[in-house]
Length: 392
Image (cartoon, rainbow, N blue to C red):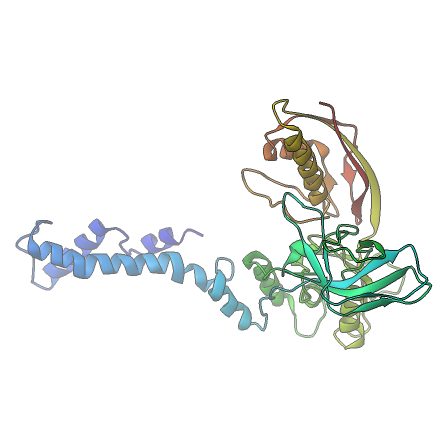
């Protein structure tokens, strides 16, 4: 919206010259015209300091703050919070990822304790290490080779929602334990960032779809997106199900990682067992079905790079590709360096990915591949294997 144009169209002056002209016009109308109109006269400077500058400040405040914050579409920050609160929609706070992680050992004769506070980290992703910590002690029983322990992320936010297998390093080794890994669905409650203005705005707008007591898509979308890390544009409905006329499935997508069975159970319990559904409705919430893909990329790097720089660049290319498949959330899309993440009901273009890799990494000289573009349909494509081959 062009709020300045709106103000101008209403005849309100927006420049110092226009304000001075209006003031002089009013002075004449009141039979008190200025005899010395010089901008350099003491009276002229006083007039500008006491009237013109404050008036311009107020008009600018109206155009840049008051008017935009009066509308949900353009309000931001605390003003948008007030719009949401007036419609009983509260901005979702940041949250830490929580769940379970599995420890493994080769010799299971004796019991073995894993203390609370044990740290588990990811490999560096573009130089950043993500970390979980056990919140309760766990014990290997005699003659068992695995044990699961409750964990939470050290930092709040969605970046901790790494895909299966990322959390695999014990910075402080525990004697007898051979490896550690976050399994599929191990993060039972995803981490979340403070809800952005754009995501919050979509949830507020959805509130207008609550037509009396009728439960339409907007109502169920509002319920589902009240849970952490689920965004309005990441909920997909499918009515082609075989459970009756009032049946439908809702599929949810996380910006990074995938929803665990426990997380989905919480949402379904809230809708179906706590009475938050329409009469006769049968809505079930699922993770998107997965498809598996083997990807191979041949790359040629800048020959002036050192061996260490080349190895680091190969890791970064690998992590960037995995980021587009929502395995991590380290790289962000910008106007200068876009990043296109894979989505349901869309086509994932490898030529677009190649262009984005070239924009992001100046040390990447050339890239080839034989991967076929992915028409995702109502599925979530996943990487089964990824090879980034350095051709020198």
